[in-house]
Length: 116
Image (cartoon, rainbow, N blue to C red; front, side, top):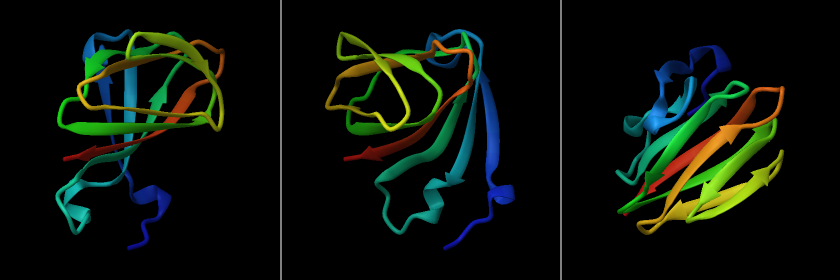
């Protein structure tokens, strides 16, 4: 399946997971697009400067973040660290994470949530 970039659906969430500001999710594929039932999210997270996704737990699933653009600060299982283009984060097995855009440029992250 090939999807043109103008066919992606988008939604904006305010105070996502208790975070600050608004975050847009640009969905590359929906759960129904996959042959199995193990992918819950495949999207780009678009986080403007000063906005964030609050600390939240991933139980029964893993989430991968890959930084595509910008700079952020991620809290992953209690560890706080700056993230930059090319960095990857894996959170799951009951651990929690949150992310905030700390630069002047919008933070864009590829997010993939896989359930088990």
